[in-house]
Amino acid sequence: MSTSENPVSSNFIRQIVAADLASNKHNGKVATRFPPEPNGYLHIGHAKSICLNFTIALENGGTCNLRFDDTNPEKESVEFMEAIERDVHWLGFQWAGKYHASDYFEQLYQYAVQLIKSGDAYVDSLSAEQIRQYRGTLTEPGKESPDRNRSIEENLDLFQRMRAGEFADGQYVLRAKIDMASPNINMRDPTIYRIRRVHHQRTAHEWCIYPMYDYTHCISDAIEGITHSLCTLEFEDHRPLYDWVLDKLQTPCHPQQIEFARLQLEYAVMSKRKLNQLVTEKHVGGWDDPRMPTIAGLRRAGYTPSSIRDFCERIGVTKKDSWIKMGVLENSIREDLNEHAPRRMAVLKPLRVVIDNYADDAVEEYDIANHPQKPEMGTRKVPFGKVVYIEQDDFAEVPPPKFKRLVPGGEVRLRGSYVIKCEEVIKDEAGNIVELRCSYDPNTLGKNPEGRKVKGVIHWVSSAHSIPAEVRLYDRLFKVPNPDAEAHFLDALNPNSLEILTGCRVEASLNSAEPESRYQFERTGYFCVDSVDSTAEKLVFNRTVTLRDTWAK
Image (cartoon, rainbow, N blue to C red; front, side, top):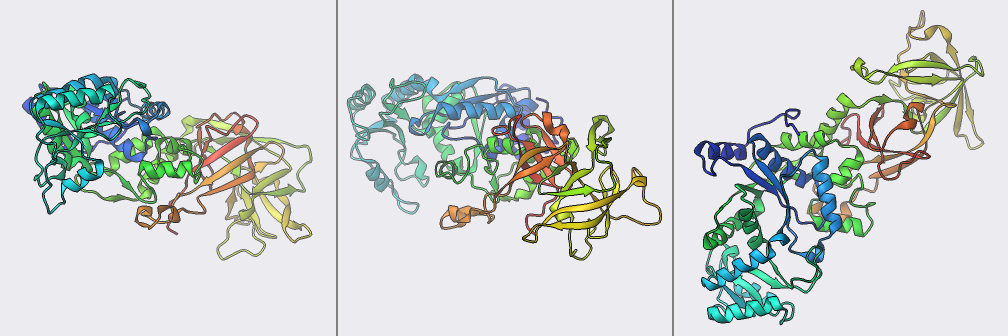
């Protein structure tokens, strides 16, 4: 994928990489990786990391790997791995190599043996709770485990027996021997292996011991020849451990870890645990629910890959955490679709209009532009007949001030067609307006009426030729900017985040609309054909974003 379609701004990581290339620090190479844990679907925060890692490689003639950090099999699945691959591809990127941490399980084990032999690791029988107690606090040093000074021979024997499955889960762990008085708690003899009897999606039951992330990650980077290991700021305190492991093992390649601020987006949660809770407790329709901040959800909502890449470039890469307004993301897709989405007419809440002085069996067809500023996008045929539908909101029996649409006795232009005048309002027994009887001025097709000025223009569809559709009006999932700040984040759910409209009518040209195709419904917003529920027999459209940012109002 070319990055030329998206603006590129400088950031401190680009500057570091440029300086490294100039000094030949990594033999003139740039190799990055995107290393997600397959324990959920990717979200917009991961998109920032994907775009950063892949574009840094692309811009410098380097490579970027996709690597699954699959060392915690209780929470991981093949479904999540497949979803991650789809998302990275959909965003427009292709990895140089696809790897798994589990590819390296034997090497990781042998490296652990090496640490034991050099006196830098030991097998510990303390429980997880005891290890926490021994670790100390930010103001108090930890204390050494009674097992810290086991002999190398005993450690090797116990570790081999751990692998052989002789011990119960949690009975032993392997810890790095560093410094229990270190001011950095991560360096206080961290656990690097634990016993877990659980099925692994790739290695089945071959292993009953699994390496910890901090140990696995740096070695995986080194094995793959990564030059710049880009990660978020929460790993800054883990960098000394990253370097310690590689220094002790004297790996041929020693990648450089660089941290950047993670994405914090208003009106959303980014925790996979919380996203999983939303899915499993059915607060949303799944990981790809259009209200979710997942890449799959944004895709189903109608976001484009280029809009997400544009958003990630706009927010930049910094060393300081900050909150990004949801409007920034929405503006990226709004600008994209304003430029590229063809226009269509759709009536979401139809009101029947009968034009009494129009012939019963007459039909006209108008050539209407697919995009008013882009003649190269062509036109489509829009039929017109005696009965049309307009939006209920485009008529007011008692109009508010400055109302420029249809009123009793008033005139309005039907977009691309005639000026009509409301002659009579028909109501049902309950007093609800069910139909308007109107007349049309046959001399107003493509020109203004003589002697009077018609201010309003409204959209419409032909009753006889339009097709039914369901329209889902998605809105922000949470009603407060920072739902994580609430005592219970679920209390901040927006009860109006989805309104389903049935009985909508859309113009006939949408009959062949493909899943994920995007349109501007004139005067209404931007919409996408739902990729899951829409069929030839039942069209379903999801609202991607409104025409303007009116959320705060």
